[in-house]
Image (cartoon, rainbow, N blue to C red; front, side):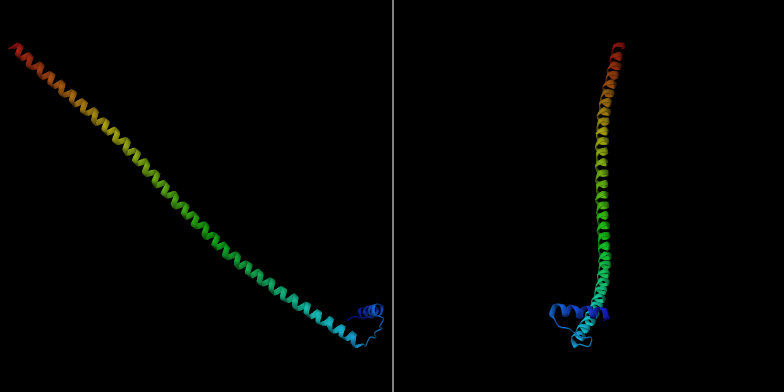
Amino acid sequence: MSTDKLDALIERVASEHGIVLSQDDPVLMMHTLNEVLLEQNEKAHAELLSKYQAMLEESFNQWKTVTSKKANALINAQQNNFSKNNDQLIDQSMQLISEKFIIAINHDIRELVRISRQAAIMNLFAAALVLVSAVLILVILS
């Protein structure tokens, strides 16, 4: 402990308690020992705080790594689900479009079949009329 600090301490004890201490007083020795212990304690606390800070930083970095991995896994899972849902939606849409085309084509085919039947019936009537006409002409001419 510096002489200035001891002198300041001696003056303070004298002014507050009315006791004058000398430089070799055992009370000052105890004060010096207390200051040394406090300094050592302060150094030990600083070292402990430094170690604690390092542990916290390491824990934070581990936590950050783990949470990043989990977040990425969740994002990938969500993207896969979205992709699957999107693929399912596309498949359903294509199936509906195919069904609509098949229904439209079947409707058109039925309409063509109906028109073809009508044409065939008209051809039969026309052929029957030609036959009747030919028979009538033969009957009239004979």
